[in-house]
Image 1 (cartoon, rainbow, N blue to C red):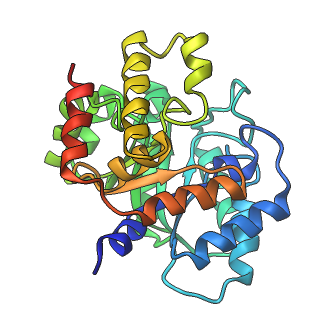
Image 2 (cartoon, rainbow, N blue to C red):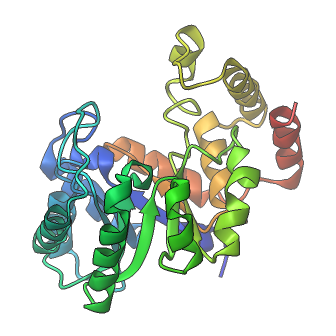
Amino acid sequence: MNAKVIGMNRVTLGTAGLGGTWRAVDLQQSVDTILYALDQGITHFDMAPAYMDAELVVGRALKQWKGENLFLSTKIGKRRGRADQKGLNDYKIDSIKSSLNTSLERLERDYVDLLFLHEPDQIPRELIHSVIDTLLSFKKQGRVKKLGLGGKPSKLLTPFIEQGNFDVVMDFNGYNLVEHQALKADFPFYKKHNLEIYEGSPLMMGLLGRRLETYTKHPPSWLPLKTIRQASNLQELASEYDMMLATMAHRYLLYSNNIDRMVIGPAVFSQMEATLNDIKEGPLEKGLLEKIHKIVNT
């Protein structure tokens, strides 16, 4: 199997943007964008009730899709809402059960391949055992094939990870073209306990894409100035290779042996098309990788 095909097989389409989490979207355009992704070979889709209409648009697209072997993941723990809304976390057992029921109805499925615990670091201590027991009951019932952690887990979840209750972890902003802190801080623990690693936000919330200039002029509180400078240096390097910074970021992360899957998050068709075109370019050459690491490690 050639590298480009392998690359497409390691992509998960995150649907927060297409569902309208960040801003209002045309639902039919989102459906059409998902159908395009399916035509291009994307078979893994990640959703969440918190991603507004993500499950709805994926469900509509799948009604029109005649192919097979799709892999669907969704989440429990947060209610429907936009990214800027507060107070969406809900880990009550009745809410979790209702959430999965609603997700399966929207997708018209009897089960999902993977169910993530959304923002696991936010679970109240007193609910942890009952939440884990409920998730395991879903798996026993055959309504869920795998269980995942949708975000960096707190130390309170360590015993449950060590017991083998989870199969996947979705990291976010911990490992990408410019940020490598998760490689030493988190990945060894995940790998020790046989967790598949999904890496979300390959463009680091836009730093490695269209927001670099904005972040340079108005640095957000969560982003170190050193990281912004490194991103600017990486953009110059990408230009030397006649490449967009986002293209370099996608190709770097997707073909890294440090992760199992890259989760992309386009919000509109043009972003989807550009991202998939990046992926089809294949791995970065060795010489370029060496220059990237020199910038990031300086």
